[in-house]
Length: 123
Image (cartoon, rainbow, N blue to C red; front, top):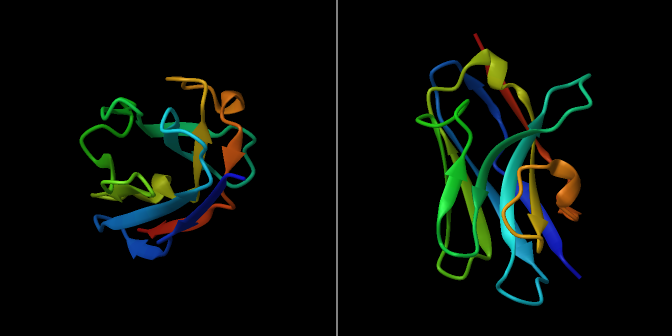
């Protein structure tokens, strides 16, 4: 059974940095991707941020490229989201999610989700 557990969320001042971690376990093969999404309070939509791909490459959306980077340890048991120059509009619950469906930006194509970690950026 796949389990994803996020950690690292915190209250930080604007301009600061945080590193989130996603502990991943239970994947039955190496052909999975792990992505970071976020959801702003009161909004239904989950926004894709970055994807750690099974071919060793990464992808981040233009909205966070240059500020956020995704990486993983050698075993891909932990996937990190490094967030720099944080802004108040980055305040959200951050989720990691996993999929065997290949490269996809659609939240509904991710079958496994963590419980989320709160990031709050004060101005």
